[in-house]
Image 1: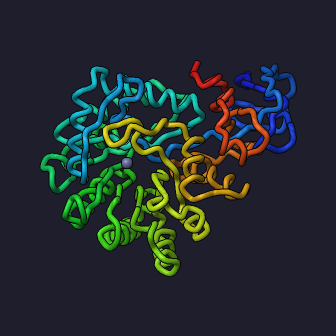
Image 2: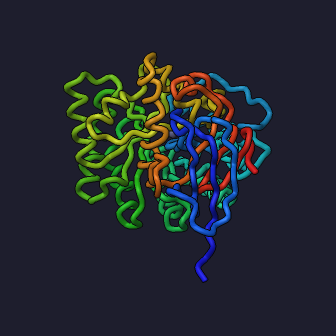
Image 3: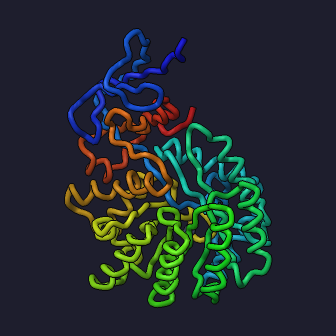
Length: 396
Ligand SMILES: [Zn+2]
């Protein structure tokens, strides 16, 4: 006897704000029709808009104070002081890191996030505790939210002895899917040393790489080009990301063309958190030149900033704000890095509501997609693999 299929029919829904249709889901993917003899569960979409669920391609769940008593931040300037602020906040929290991460990631999933790439601090100050906590949250959310983990040397690799060994241990123990890095030429002060270590671990264990570059000008561009060269040399195309890459935001058209060509050829992707007008990546220009760009929350209510909410629809809204989106097509385009860009970045198939595409979507009340990006309606229903996993912004 073949295994009976799980079939759900979502009636009266409007994919991407189009005409109402009936969406049939068989065993987690969209299908043409209900299989003969199958009994379908029916969900009434009441004319709501169906949008793909989104990917948070860059978040720090271990640093969050989300759901905790208000935390008052102290003045800080420069990376070293912010990093010390992380440690202070971490030590001040009464709730264990795993519980805080689970709370934040559960909230993200309930707001329509299907996957995250979590950068988790690895440093002698924490050992692997933060990684253990986020890995436990990942287990708890299996089937609801995919969690990729990057072992992130926030305190520097070269400037903080002991970090390289911890990174390697994290990867060897299966706690991390990728190795992180941080401002190799600026904060860490040894571009070659840091990149040798990061790419060495990636090569030995077959992991991905995702490196934060906040540095601007040549201090940011030189390691970015170095990362592209190493990616090509090691055959890691499609497995390497540069996060933030503020150095690209200020480039003129000719330099951007050159950088985009190098990134696209090497198969190195980018993430932006749309933190502001001067640092947001020109994501449409980059995508048009073949560079994969994902969108992320970055820190959420952490020591660096009291802002953030791990809601990727809201992040698409902030992206629109940062690039001064005004036209409908400009507003709609802000969803692309959160939907298709992020999915490609974490290795998930895109959601386009056609047969064979994964049934990962959310239902919201609204007129059309541009209006939804502006108004941020409640996520009435969130569906993962054809199964309703959240209603009205709550899991369960
Ligand atoms: Zn980050």
